[in-house]
Length: 258
Image (cartoon, rainbow, N blue to C red; front, side, top):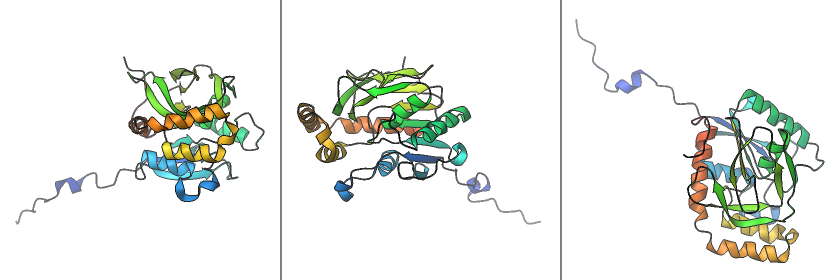
């Protein structure tokens, strides 16, 4: 009897199915200024650029634009963007989005909140957000993060802050003007006040279009900080690596380094 020829591609005999990508739902709570046109990507697209176009199967929910609030199981993991709005403002989509955060938390799905998202998650889970008495934090800002030996430079653009974190939250980072700049809630939620998705061009565009709300001296200091912000790019990439792994469920929790 003639012997069956051995496969020249033994690896094709098993595990032939491609690995399924994590479905990441981006909950858009704000948009880039229309005055900037195509010179700056919109907020959800900035996260795709940061995390990598092929890193996830992305789904987009324009919450601020009126899209219905999705079910927690619509995606494997979730990300809440920044916004020009305050989490304490009376918008019809804020309370339903807070309810979604609580359900995502109950179901144990990975969730990341950035700036407004950081604040909304904190408020939804029992924390408190207010306008910071010290005013705006804008431009290149150094943060002390528990998992980094040295100060981490990232872009900031906010006046509101988490004043009181949710019960049981772990504080993972701070700056000189922001005491609760990074939070961990259980093993499935991480939030960050600064914007790892922003580079110099994005912040410059925001200052040019929305900077009138910032006091002149603070605005000038923010512009000056952008003149020497090359080190932000390395920090952005490092934060992106951490969030990418976290949202994929490749790390259970980002514990502080020993």
